[in-house]
Length: 420
Image (cartoon, rainbow, N blue to C red):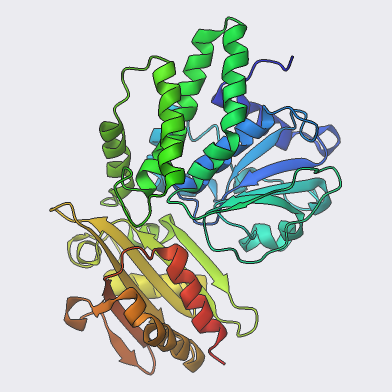
């Protein structure tokens, strides 16, 4: 019989111990689970959940192999994610318990060949991790478009994992994939008369899963994002809470609390707002670099009502500085927010700077996708720009709400690829 499962905090402590041990004392290879570079709530929670369940899963190909969940961000950036802090607290853990890029040993202390990587919320390993470990990926669970990356078949992996399905939240796919593991763990421990501990852990895991699913689907109310996978996953998690007899859980109240924390950017600098949920790509053929920042409030808020911190310029000035800092040819900001009447909106800003090639790509994106996205000039064009030095900038209201960054980023990348 496998040993009893651990609390989430104890599991994270075990993962930390394995990662920080001297190379001669580490398991070999180390198996990591990591989300995408934006490190939003969905990426962070889905990595933690998949690592936890697969560590406690015993089968012919996975006899309790430790899976290490890694937050795809520097430790300092955890402060920009109060919603993650709240969900972690509900799971009996805190930000000091999780592992970030700062804890990842540098080369040559961690050789690529001594690692394996499971990807959640993306299907090709990117950024600095991709440069070092991109060919060590052994599987993925993702809800973004398939980028066609090859998942490495490692000799001791007889059950390759590659799940790519459209859902509102990647965590929903993780929960569906791990449902049988979770059920088996609960049943085994109840038979072992450890029901009190079991129900406590089940409740913690359920709340950790419900946070991102409810946020990404607007409490299952976003008809453009919510799928049957999301509804099913919420049912799985809430059944565990009911089974634990947790009468304190109220879905609407839980969602409202986490959403309020996610949307509160009132004390953040513009730079922090841009890097809170940020992704970037470089087109290998054209060399153009795209950065996309997702913002949880309207442009009216960040442009007009957001008071910058001391020493900062206005929204446009700081966005330009951010683009220069990141070396971007195309700088995009995408927001999604609910107005005072409870109506959901999306807005898009695209700023091409530095080269005619970048400007051609940005204009091509607008021309090709204006009707598909139902792009309408925002704010009477007050953020628009045509300037030989400063580049080409457009800001739009987006009428087609079903298209989030998951769809718009590939549109921009296609435009970059065709800019030659």
